[in-house]
Length: 102
Image (cartoon, rainbow, N blue to C red; front, side):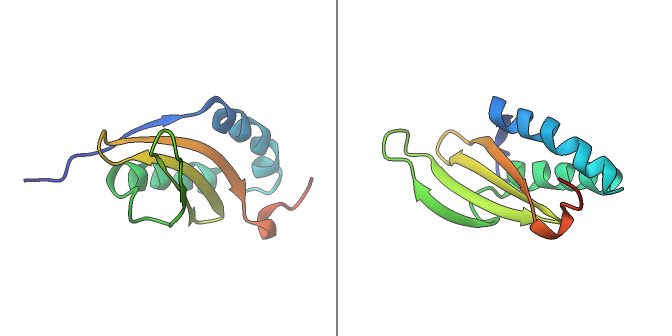
C-alpha cells in the first residue's frame, strides 16, 4: 500500500511572508527558481514532512511537531500532526545570501 499523503495548508502569516518576499525575489532575478522551490517544498511536505528537515520541538497542547527544512534558498517552517496527516506551513525565510536588496 502506498503511504497516505499529508494535507498541506498555509497559515495566513506564511502567505503574507510570501507576498513580502516577492519583490526581493523579483529584483534578485530568481522568480522562476522561487516558484519551483515552493512547488518542491509542497511536494516534500505532502510526502515526507516527518523526515524532511529537522524537528525543533513538539507543541505541548496540540501535539504538533514543529519542524524546519531548507529547499534551494528557502527555509520553510511547518507544523505536522502525523496521526491526522496534516501539515501547516507557518513561515518562510530566505537564506541570507539570496537577499540581494532589502
